[in-house]
Image (tube, rainbow, N blue to C red):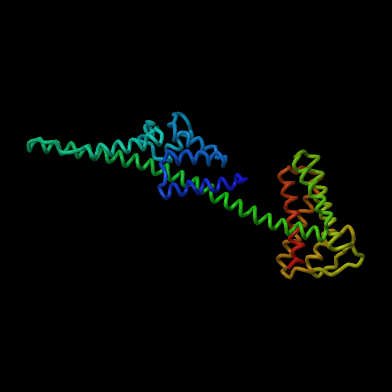
Length: 308
């Protein structure tokens, strides 16, 4: 079954092609773009497109916004403008074009001919001006439709790419965690379940589990030792309670870049402290999810140091 995301991408691309290749009429493009706006949850765009099909109501902020965007105002202060839908704009353009075809110099004597020519030239100018104004509205509407479809298209393409990249990375991390500290994977579902509840107790339990995951991770990759080591010119303890020291020792032995080691050390310290503090202080669901997500990625980054 075709995914919604792929359907949105295909529909947006179809609209872009329809516009750029002038394949279908404006009304058909409006209908397709309305469907795209519905799939993309673009509420304001849907409201505007409804006006393009049914006409623009007065005393409506969205209507006035898109009256301006599409160049429909004749006199903004007096609220005079083309409040009519796009189909009527198209019909008016055709109607005005027919008027031009019908304008001709009538049979008359010399004196009357001058008057007739002036009248025809004035009429021609008025009709041409109106066609230009209406065509400008139509052009702006089509341009906005194109911009919206293009934005949706590239946003969804990027989302799919990012999702694909993350999924591939996640598979790598899961394999590394399973190989090096498999029991951590068993704890992840419980964290996700608790974070989905969003209540304070569940968040606190999830953060406690995050901290335990880091503790368990340290025990797997660098078991406790009573013998200290020198790290960065300092003697550091590797005992059971020195969780971060042991992880940093592991990183130091596998990463040549000092800046990267510092980055990992600081990130690890921040995540561990915040996970610990969150058990006793206010951490909302969104921050808790971010903490868990960053813990997961950091453990993966550390394990990938050995996978090179």
